[in-house]
Structures are given as structure tokens and as C-alpha cells.
Length: 146
Image 1 (cartoon, rainbow, N blue to C red):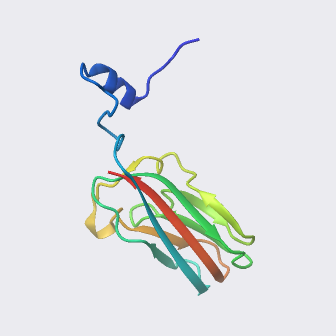
Image 2: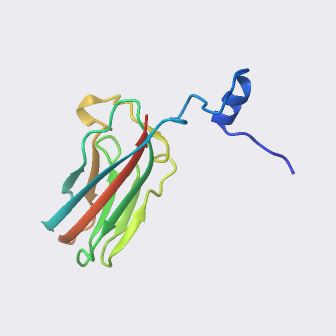
């Protein structure tokens, strides 16, 4: 069996000094959690809910989690930002209560760079995707490091 190394492990092994805290991708930094909640009242398709404060430039997003009530027939959401509306969570049905974690490869370990300030990736957005009217409680947590 062959053993392979991740990018950070490769960088750490190439450093001749102690590499218990390697640089890159937020490794060795403090993990922050940004929590927010919203009581939805008849949100319609295309509505956006801003989740928490803007993330700092240079942060890495490691996990996102959204908990929700049964929000109504034909309701769903995605979680992303103004650059990519489903960067972290793709369209998820909310006709039954549940919890959805980040489910995209590109959103896991995403680097906040704000390449387009008018469509910032710093503000996490929950978007109503389906045609139903969304009513109920939404709670979200964004786990990031810098």
C-alpha cells in the first residue's frame, strides 16, 4: 500500500525546522464559529438572508451547517455568497425539518479573497431556491480560520 501526502503535509515535510504548525490553509490557527438565526416569514424564491458578519479577507471556510424547521411545501435553500450562490450548500429541500452540512468540494477550505468587491465572497448568503413560500426558523453556523 502506498502513502500519499496532502499539500500542507508536503510543505511541512519540506521545512527543516519543527513543523508541528505548518503554514497554509489556516492550519495551526484558531477556529472561529459565526452563528446566526433568522425567523422566516413568507420568504419567496430569490430572497436572500445575510448570515452573520462579513468574513475577514484571508479566512478559510472549513464547515457550514444550517438547521431548519419544516419550512413549507416546495421550499429549498442554498448557501453561498454573491459570487457563487451555492458555494457551500447546494439546493436543499426544507419541506421537513433537518440539518444540512456543507456539501460541495469547492466550498470546503474555500479562501476568502474578495476578487470582486461588488459581488463579495465575504458575506455568506442563504438563498431561497424553490417556488414555495418559506416560513419558520433557520439557524446557521460558519466555521472558519485565518
